[in-house]
Length: 323
Image (cartoon, rainbow, N blue to C red; front, side):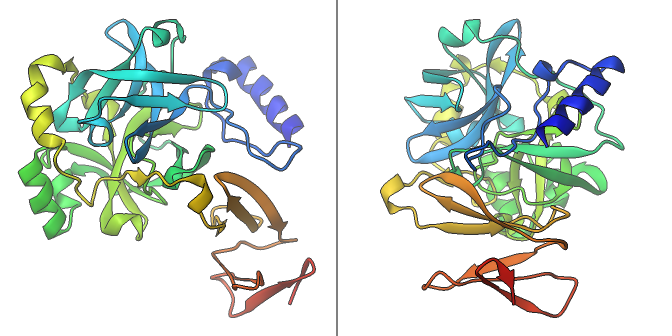
């Protein structure tokens, strides 16, 4: 698989598309069956008991980390890290309250490089999200699809209770035009970049309906962000720090020792795969000979069951064979 990726990247370079170092490719398994963070510019952001995603970018000539404001507001200590780099004692330098966006800086980040480029070319593009879902410590990337009429005021996407809650909060502004998406935008993805296939950011993942259980979410368009210095906004930021709207995504950090094993599958894969997440690490434990997987369950004894939405069978995995 790595060989095919290298050939594809060389072909893109010959076509004049940015070099591989400028892109954020989906993470691929290493030889040790663990997943590596392939995008050095995407980070797991921690603030108290909150976990979200951020990405390196340049704002007004300075390099920092862009993330969702609701995940870091009110925090005195913010950290960001991936398998390649880590930054401590980040501070909120700039905000766009209406777009629920924050720009984090530190003296270390001044030497971090250019970050990911922005783009406003989201029409007719294949898009994907890249981040740290459910507070896990590895990057995960998958495709997301713009909804029919993807550009719409946020208020038209929200359910009544969420609309009232966010209208009272004022961040994000429910009058803002958002990018409506279908796909698994879930907790932990707040602040994650929505990328074109060539690795440019078009929007920032923000929230979703029914706490992300119905695969309908939204992202704030980067072309609409208007950065302002955070210091004059301190009173408003203090007010925002007191609320945690359910429609906005942010995972809760849990001690590693208390995390139960988690078994997941991704219906977006053409060949069904089952993954085990244990102590924050992802491991592939089974690949089907053919056919997608839409659901997986594991009994207390460890017996694995799964199903495919396109047929009428429930399968049991028995010593590597499907029964």
